[in-house]
Structures are given as C-alpha cells and as structure tokens.
Image (cartoon, rainbow, N blue to C red):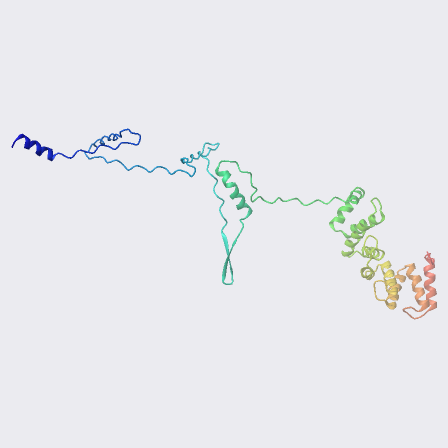
Length: 320
C-alpha cells in the first residue's frame, strides 16, 4: 500500500469536524464554559457521586426571601438557682356519681376547705416559698363560766350576823326564816322584798309554819313576788293545819269572800272559831259578826255579844 492510500484511509476513519459556534446577537463569539474538574476519588476507590442539590427556599409574595424565626430565649432561672418551671396544675376534684332512676349524672363536688387550701399552697411549697400558717384542727378553747356578782345584801348580813348567813345557806329553816324577816324589815341590811320572799319559800318548803304564813302573805299582797291568790290559800291552809293562828284567821277570810278559793261560809266559820279560841282579837270580832248575822252558822246574838266583849278586852277597836 502506498502512502497516498494510507493517508486517505486515515482521513476516512477520522470524525467529522464540529461546526463553528453560532455568533451572539452582539457579534461576540461565544466560548463554551470551562468544564468542571472531576471529583476526587474516595479512599476506598469508589467514585463519589455529587449529592443532589437542595431546592432553593420559596420566596414570599412580596419577593423577599423568608428567614427562619429567631429562637425563643430560655426561661429565667429562679432565685434559688433552679430552672423556672411552671407550677403543677391544680388537680381536678373527683366527680361524684349520682344515680337517678336509669341515668348516671356526674356532679362535681367541691373539696373541703383544708384540701383546697393545701392544693393552692402546694406550688408555693414546691418552689421553696414560705406558705402562710394555716389553722388546722385547733382545739376549741374552754371558756370559764361567768361568775355571778355577790349581792350587796350578803355583805351587810355577813357583817351583822355571819353565822346566820352560813346556817341559812346550809338549809337550816329557822335561819332561813329569820333571814327573810331581816330582809323584809330592812334591819341592818338593805330592804329586799324579793329576796325575803325567796328565803320564806325555802323555809316553808322545809315545813316551817311561820315561814309558810309569811310566804302566803307575800303571795296574797304581792310583796316581792307576783300576786297568786290560789297559791296563797294553799300555803295559808298548810300553816293553819299546823296551828298557826293568823293563818287560820286569813284562811277564814279567803273562804268567806272567795279569794283564791271556792266560797264556803261553813268552812270559813270553822277556821274563824279556831283562831278566835286561840286568842286572835280580829277572829273574835269576825266570829261575833258571823253569829250575829247567821253566816255559816245558826244565828246566836248572845254568843255573838260574848265574842265581841272578848275582842274589846284585847283592845280591838273597829276601824283600827
């Protein structure tokens, strides 16, 4: 083979030439951009492939690039150096289930005051803050009984006759009756009719006939006590049955006029005769009047005259 033939064969095997680049609008020749160098080989001999590119961040409507919001600052530390944490939530009270017919209704029951106070103060205690003092299960104070003031009359009686006061307080009926007389008359002590009637009553309940008459008279005349004719007649009768002359006379008057008792002339005449025979001038005059008029007995003017004379011999004068 000749040199001309070998040259023609080599020309036929060569690639065709690339067309020239197109001219740009401004007349400058565009040059291809330089090719990037191949990535370096990894240590293990494998070819590293480039990682896919991240898409660009979306732009806002006004064309400005969006930036991530700034991070929130950490919560401030508490005074004791611990990280400030929000207080725990208050526990919800357990619902109370109420059964009504076929339906179940859940009602919220409020916790007792002590439990509610503990729940409110729990966050403060957890943070180390001193909680206020809570009064819990404190014993109820026992107050002493009020002391009644000593009546004024007791001071005077103690100065006048201390032993009499001691005996009366001990329940001796004679001392109680004498103390009542002292308070009624106002002798050496301030006058106190109410206190006198009370001491008469105490002695009368012990069976003292003079005290029974005095207490009945206090009820009849409303001396220191409210007027009570029925009770007065009962005490007059009790004393009269024990032989008290004035009680017999006044009982006869109550029965003759119907004061606190049923009107009974015969019974009145009987008690009046007993008092007259015992020497009561008033009863002698009244008995003479009953005999002269025949009230509760047979009319007897001679006997009436006799009783009038006895009353006059004792100094009885009508109207005194």
